[in-house]
Length: 193
Image (cartoon, rainbow, N blue to C red; front, side, top):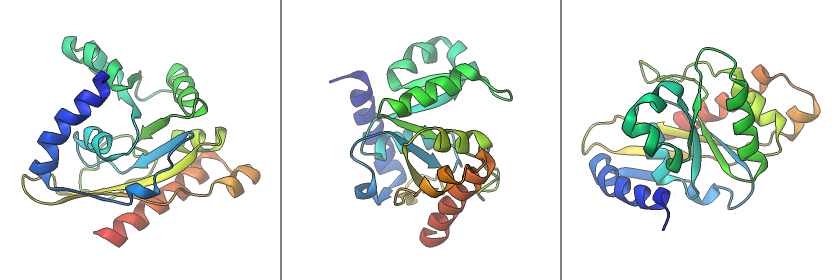
């Protein structure tokens, strides 16, 4: 058993009963091939919650500052996290994200870039559209529906993979692709809230 699987088991034992996590649509998750998993962002607990509910291991970008914290810089790499410099175009992080998708793995991203203060879906950043258009990875929308309060139900909803072929053919801009993905996340929020 690798460290990721071990950590997933431990974190599941804590978070699943604490937040009474209900997972909807996990069977829609592609069993193989590159997947760009796009979720709304309402809490610092979103990455571990998505990590324990998704059927496959996920790679996440994490802000570079976390890799300067002694214990985290040891823990984050075996948990499939890699650093990103926020507020600027980080070419190395972009390359790493593309490589993950091209290798047929799962790259989890929060298109809003930062947590929503009011729980409503914010505008997505164009980087998400860049990853969606530059690879043939399947794009899976995900809605995390809180509140994060002990013993109150938390839902994690995985949607059907989004068809991006038409946008790729039309040479859509990253902004247009991001908006398209965000509409799918909003539709999941509207349906399951």
